[in-house]
Image (cartoon, rainbow, N blue to C red):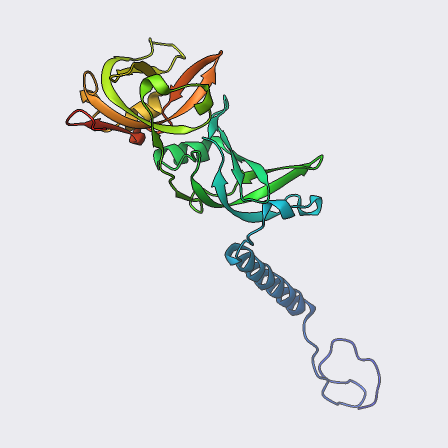
Length: 256
């Protein structure tokens, strides 16, 4: 009422007027913290549920480094397993090509779920971009969001497997001649020797793939059909089994 400064009191000592109490600074601080927390939570929800955009590989630019994109394309060759346990495969979409890297844990999940990319497969996935010196690569974000449509593999006789098939997936069939497990404390893979009416070949795979093979106890002498990838190791052709689920033990000799 009198216009004098009276500090924090609620009643003016000069004129006796009631002084309206101001909002506490502590309350303002807590309100600010609460609003900031709500804002961060909303940003998190937006980032988590936002739809990652589909980008054509030919439209990737250096300014997109570390960005997340979705790619729909075709696998150019069977995925390769690195010494670290990770994987890598090439994808193209008609406008460009890119290398996709997969971590060791993701590679294990792909093998277990029979989702290892193979040549010709249609693929839809999301990944993080890494661009350096005008070369781009990607890292797979999540196995859960990777979708594959398997391409049919051509059936090839064992004698017709040659260098022209390196990097491709093929379907072979025959009778097991011998299953050679790796020696104890050895880094060698399993070797499955099979034969058909044209010749003999050896399929190599590791313990993880062996554990996945259905009816593996019946392999010796059995007729089998499988999808394998053709590779070259030390200038020699090699057949590799990407997943034990790709090898089928047959109840009768395979038909043409």
